[in-house]
Image 1 (cartoon, rainbow, N blue to C red):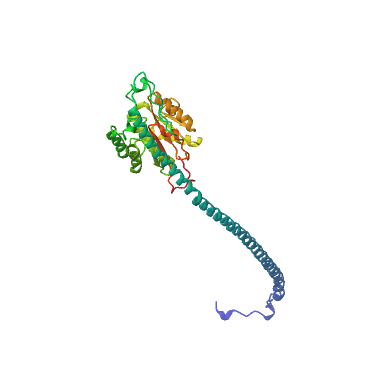
Image 2 (cartoon, helix red, strand yellow):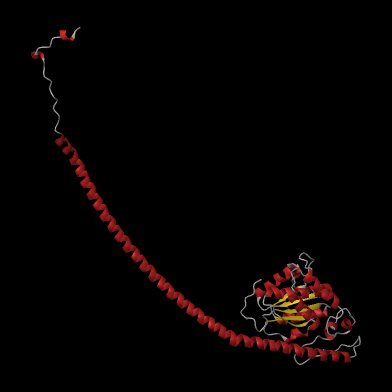
Length: 356
């Protein structure tokens, strides 16, 4: 078809097109912004409220902290004052104790040491006189010899035929100046205890570590003091018991069951310490303690003296041992063949506490 053959439409047939009408945009946006604006204002008001509340809480917290710090400082200041007062009181008490120790203890200890040494010197002289008098006496089986007494010491009564004829027991070790016959045996035992301790040995054998300082004290007591005299305390009751245990063990090895240890301690609680210490050091049991056993504990010297005299009558070997707390020595204790007293060193404090 030819384009020129198409005839145009008449003008009346043409219908004009209508343009659509748009809503008013400014009105719609305003309606949407109003709620947002109100919401914004509400949020800003809430923020201002929260900020004000926060500032108020911060102020309250700071006030509380300041009050706590003030109270704490006052309490610390009060505690400081109380501590300073306590320190001052303790310092005064310390100075007072030092003064009492300086003025009282030294004098008491020195006086005790002088008295013990005086007892020792007097005893040696008395025994020499007794030995000389005994040598001059002519004893016969039918003659009862009157006991020889010194002014202050009650010596052992010379016996009749029953006692004189028994040669197993006598005062030879004391009168003749020491343990000459048992010298090698005693030294051997001391060396054994010091270098080869047997912690599981038989009863009555020393079972604890024996240091050279302990061995020196034991050896001095046997050979320099002839088994009669004082030993300077070690500063510990347990070590004193160790030294005494070594002496008891050696004498038990020499004399067997005839050796009987008589311990004098004036305080009941310390008697318990001696019992436990001897059990531990010698491996003995509670059955070995008692009036007719190997160890007897006493609180009074008079009872010990009576027991020792009976043991000598029965041909036993009493070993008298005095605890270091015995400040006054009964002269009657010094008459026996074997006695040991622990003397407190004047340099040691009398208030020292001993714990087993």
